[in-house]
Amino acid sequence: MSEELRVSPIETRGVAGKKRYAMVVDTRRCIGCMACQVACKAEYDTPLGVNRTWVPYKVVGKYPAVKKQFLPRLCNHCDDPPCVRNCPVEATFKVEDGGFVLQRYERCIGCRSCMAACPYNARFMLPSHRTYTPITNVVDKCTFCFHRVTQNLVPACVQTCIGRSRVFGDLNDPASEVSYLVATNATQVLRPEQGTKPHVFYIGADRNATEFGRDAYRKPDVMELERAAFKNHFKI
Amino acid sequence: MGDYVWFHDVSWHASYAVYFFIIGIVAGLSFLSYGSWITPALRPLREKAAYGSIALLALGSLLLIADLSQPLRFLNILNPAYLHFTSPLAWGSLNIVAFGVVSVLYILALVKRDESARTKLLATAAALLALGLPVYTGYDLTVHQSRPVWNTPIMPVLFVALAIASGSAVGSLLAAGNEAARRVLHQYLLWSTAAVGVILISILGTTNYGGAAEELTFIILTTGTMGLIFVGIGILAGTAAPVALLLAPFGKQQGGLIVASVLVLVGSAALRYALLMGPQQLQTLY
Image (cartoon, rainbow over all chains, first blue to last red; front, side):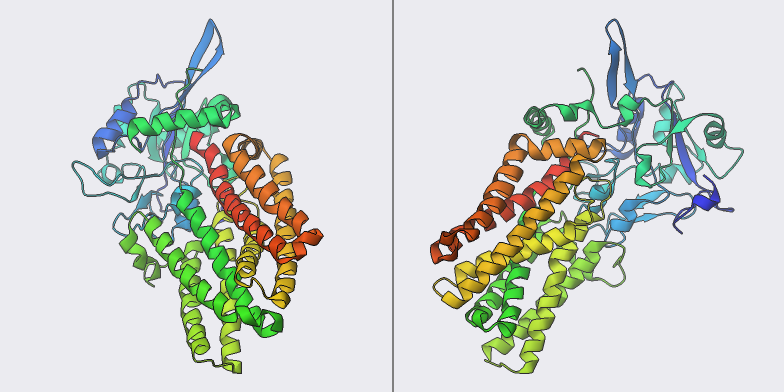
C-alpha cells in the first residue's frame, strides 16, 4: 500500500522507524491438520466453543474431482481497526509499534461493541468459568502472540505449522519474508471493501472460502436448527 | 455439504432489543411532556408522561447494565480517563446520564407545581436530550458498516420515528377518555407510524438491491421465523394495519385509537428485535 492511501493517523504500515507485523497464509500449503488451532488453544487455554484461530473449509468441485479449500482464520490486526474505534472505554487498542490490536481485560465492560464492529468474527466472549485463569466474562481475541513476538519468537500457530503455510514478520522491513511474499505473490485479504486494511494476507485463497457461505442461502429455519445443536453441544 | 462452518455467536442478544424498545418509549413520553407546554390539549399528559419516562429510564438503564458481561464496570464508561469519544456508546452513556439528571430536576419542578418559564426550559432540555436517545441507539448500529441494514444512515431517523410512534401509543393509552388529547395523539400516531413505514420500505428496497451480504440479509429478514416477526408482526400488523385503522372512521374513536396503539407497540417491539437480530445472522456464518 502506498503512503498516499493512508487515510487514518492510526495506520502504521509504511511508516519509517515503526514495525508493522503481518501474517501471510499460503493456502496452497495448508493441509488442514488444525495444528495451528491446537497450538493456539494450548498457548492460551482458550475455552471450548471459542477460538482465537480456526480453520474452516469448503468442499469444492464435483465428484470424483473434489477437494477441500482451507482458510485459516484469525484476527486480521487491521491497520484501521473498527473494533478500536467502537470500544467506549478504550479497552481495545492498537500498539503503535508493531500494529498489534490488543485487549485490556481489566478495563473491558463486556458491551460487545467490538464484536459487532469486527467484520471477521475474530472476537468472542470468554465464559464465566475457566479452569486455569481468572480472566472471564470479557471479550478476547488473537493477539498475534504479542508476548512471544516481543521475545523474538513467532506466534504459536506459525511455530507449529508443519506445511509452513503461515509466515509471520514485519511488513515494514523490506528484507522480511512476509514483505517478500507480499511483494512477489498475488495476495488476498478478507472483506477488503470494509476499509479495515487487514494484515493477514492470503495466497491462493478461493472465493468459495472468502465470500459469504452458500449455507446462508439455505432456509433460515434449517440453519437455526443446526446453530441450536451447535450451541447446545458447546453449552454456549 | 461436508463443509466445516464455525458458528459464531451474535454480538448483541434480544435483551438489547428490549432496551431499544424501552428507551424509545422514554424518549416519546418526554416529547409528549414537552409538547404539553406547546399544545394545551396535551396538558393532562404532562405529569403522567414525565413520571412514566423517568420510571422506564430507570428500568432501561438497569437492563443496559445487566446486559454487560461485567455489569459493575459500567462506571468505566463514565470515567473521563477511559472515555473514548469515537464510540457512540460513550456519547450515549453521557446522554442517558444528562437526560436522567435533567428529568429528575424537571419532575421535582412538576411535583412543586411550578409552571414557570424555568420549568418549561427544563422540559425543553429534557426533550432535546431525549431526542439524543433514539439518535444514539440508531447511530450505535449505523457505525457498524460491515453489517447490512445496520449500516444504512437512515437508522437513527427510523429510531426517532419509532420513538415518537411508541411514545404516542403509550400516551394514547394514558390519555384514554380525554377527547382533545386523543385528537392530537391520533395525528402524532398516524404520521409517525406512516413515517416508520416509509423508512422501512426504503431500507428494504436498498437492502434488496445491495451486494451479496445485503441480499442474503434481505432473505433472512423476509423468510422463516424472522420474516414472520419482521414482515408479519413488525410491518403488516404493527405498521400497515394501525395506519389503515387510524385512517378509518373507527380509528378516530377511543376504541380504535387504543387498538392502533397496542398494534404499534407490539409492532415496534418486533421491528426492533428483527432489526437487531436479523442483520447479525449472516455474520455468524462467516
